[in-house]
Length: 477
Ligand code: SF4
Image (cartoon, rainbow, N blue to C red; front, side, top):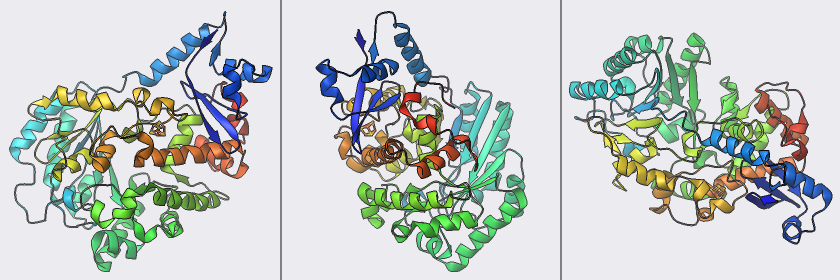
């Protein structure tokens, strides 16, 4: 008999047990003691065999099957660079409370890409061995330099068969030049909307007039191009912590079917201005559960998802791999994705760029001219693996979870503090607990919402057996 690694965690009055690849089962709370005392019931023995935790003679194929699933999860088929975040200018006309360090004032000199930088970019992308590229313009405010956006678009279209662009803009202005860029079929628009006008004024614009203008521009673009082309992200700050409904209802009123409830980053000024929220996972988790209750109520007669929880639900029960950079393991920094700053420096993520801007730690991993600093990238990647992390290897949620060493560095200045003390871990434990509590209690209201997210429709087939642990090992969606 072979025993493969398994992990467990109490969930309500049951014991959740997961195997190496995320198959799960609920058991009596003393099953592990009885496992080692060799006094399992027949039913428990059968369940553990079905989960490939116990592999009997003649069943060796289960081990091979498990190895194949692990290989499929961790293979590097997305390892070609195919997603760039580019900062053509660091200048911005706003100074949001959570973002000041990653911007330069409107009149600042030396923070825009020059002709030399464009030539470096041309050379850099010419070395990328891929047919497709997705490029996100971030800032600063990229629409301050539509000429640069056009140049960068031209360079990319020269080197790649297909290119997709996302312009991340604060939407304070719409000029003909900017609209001509937005009108292109391969350009999407992304903006930040933190809530109604008053919240926008508090967090972002400092002026009701400007907030109204942003919201007007947003509605104009959605009317003109349809909701598929324009997306928005909120950053949750203290002023909506006790009343998430206002933000969620506002997104519903704007016609969205999804919201990504993102906490403010623990970066730069945000760690001072939004000190408590950016440090306290308990505060965030309370807010999140409150918000989710409202989202579930909205789903009683329509479709609405919380992006992140829906992503986890699809990944656990739908077997879908996600490419979400902050929630994957191994982290694989600088393989498929990187950030290019206004000065040509390369970073593994936008948060890494911010940490370097604040002189917390230099996380640059090369330059466009010199390419990647392989030694530094290898150092970062060495720590970005939850499958070998001394704490995560004992966690029942390890197969579904990721690792975010940049977040750990930003909050604690190091990557080796006990995982359960980190914000990342506390947030994810809470999310996974929530999901499995609903499954353990067979909470039909929540499970119906999970089915909507799995099937991505308001009237999903009510296949609750997907959440039944006896069905875990059958093929999923
Ligand atoms: S970060 Fe926390 S929740 Fe995620 S695998 Fe590690 S210990 Fe588990």
